[in-house]
Image 1 (cartoon, one colour):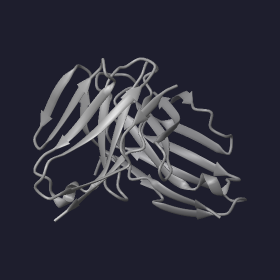
Image 2 (image 1 turned 45 degrees about the vertical axis):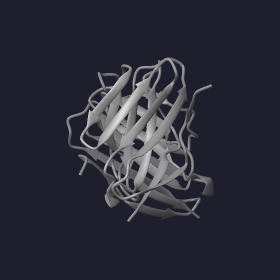
Image 3 (image 1 turned 120 degrees about the horizontal axis):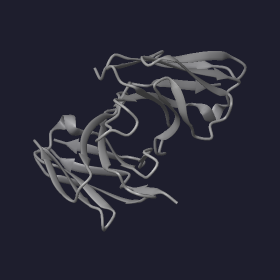
Length: 115
Length: 109
């Protein structure tokens, strides 16, 4: 238990569906992140939120839309995805964006399959 | 460009010692991290190096040479539960963590 909870753990959706991934952290951290993990590829940073403000958008297609209503919750809204978007989506949090160490705490991920 | 290199797969025997290497080329350097990820689970923090030298934490140690752009993770007295992927990540000038592809370690009895 890392203190970061993601739901759902598994999601199958068609290309025309709209779905959302949810992340909640119970660590009192100020920064939250979405990463994409594909087979045999490095973890790719998608979005960074610091104190509920988006501070990083790593050239992610607009079919992925993040939302951070407060410092404990992070969503990733999905719309008209492509099969190549199938991957494990990891949420993470840290005390702040660039503190000493800056260790990330990851959730267990949401495994997304786009048909 | 920015690049993190580590071997894709390694195998070792229970009770042995294994060293997982990581080389990096990044824009600036503000620390190197090692994470462990068991299949189907969250990556978990193992170690952080920002100065040259060896950091020891129980059976795991991590080494850093900034001049060589090189780190290794040393696992001693291997156990079956150490079978996992080990991710090397570097924080560059922009504070973003840049990850390698990970090294999948299999420990055999």
